[in-house]
Figure (cartoon, rainbow, N blue to C red):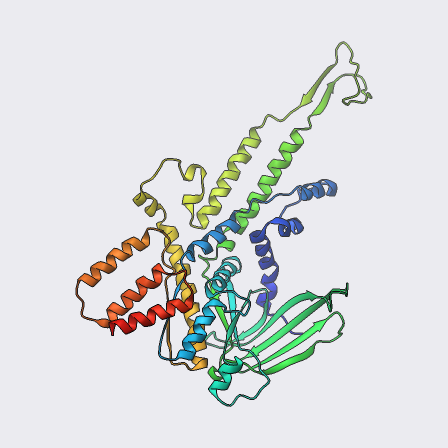
Length: 455
């Protein structure tokens, strides 16, 4: 239906491998032949048995999840300033359900960050409900929900083609998605369906094709919600090469997989010792647990067993590879082995060891906040609520951070700075930070009360 971009063609198999390395489990086992190397002249039967016994120690998947969980340990604070009650009500609801599937804004962007750590980038599509009724006023928009924009998440495996202008801005895109479904609960046949969605700066078109149709059909077209801004409604969370953790660790993780499986296979085979008969005459006797052998006066019998030196080298190499995975992901303090000791450390010492990781977390937090601000402010521009939106937070990674910040805030207030605006911003920041896990509607109410009280 649509052609694929050359960059997409070059990367799609690699990105699919990255997905397997992150997921692990049965998804990895089904694709193990892409990662477990076959030895030179290894019989297919032996290689097949090794594939059946493959196991995967998924360090990189745990590292990516750790970064996402640590960064979003406290929710980002969404600050909405303005007098539009309809706008405040909409954005309050958006924080609770931003994708029409019940995902709150924090969970949605946590998943976007995970996708970026795996694929290097992730995409957020801003869409609006399509309604049939005629809309004449803003009240009509609010009543039918036509102005209630929502988000959809996509990965680089979904974006198959695109074009950019000389400034790097998207001119048009093509998204491709797949799904399986049944016509009814009584129908045993499953239908495979592919959908292509085209967006440019003003228009969209959706095509669909399934097993029952020979050619794709156009099922929907029109003007998309961001047409008045003259931009493609897709926003990119792009990480630099240094922050793309999967690409930094993938080769080491694959090397660790092959070494660990080779060592496991050798140890297993070593448990089945092979008998050796030293004799000048022809030996034709059957050897087994239920048999006996007859030897001549000068014959000898024994068992082969490896000395184990290479096993120790392999074990040491595996430990080094494990530590290297953590090192390239800026997590030396969690690598274990010789890089970390069992000696207890002071809080200051731990903080120094954790300094590099904290800088990486702040870098990731800044990228996520930039995208969140852009998406939310774009939504506000389309709606025209005349609200000021800001995103703060994603810069605290220690439970003890809040107590020190609270002390700093108290000192600032005691300085007697005669600025109501300063006092409002400081109190709102502290309140939202301490009450980060309450409902967005309550947060908005607290902000309004602080602004009204100080004024």
